[in-house]
Image 1 (spheres, helix red, strand yellow):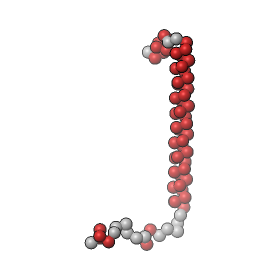
Image 2 (cartoon, rainbow, N blue to C red; image 1 turned 120 degrees about the horizontal axis):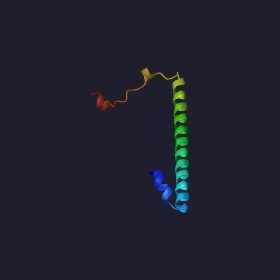
Image 3 (tube, rainbow, N blue to C red; image 1 turned 60 degrees about the vertical axis):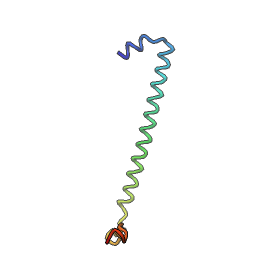
Image 4 (cartoon, rainbow, N blue to C red; image 1 turned 180 degrees about the vertical axis):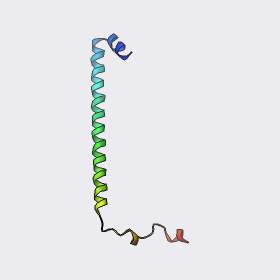
Length: 70
């Protein structure tokens, strides 16, 4: 159906549609690259936290305030 619609368009309209498709594809690629960079950054941050062995969680203070305890 889309192909039939494109066949009925004028040459200028077809060129505009092709340009629009390329722009959309380029935007999708850029978004995917940005997402991939965020994922990699997050994984690297998690790896750094996972390697820290000097933290003693048993000695950390409770997140509850004095009011919440009583």
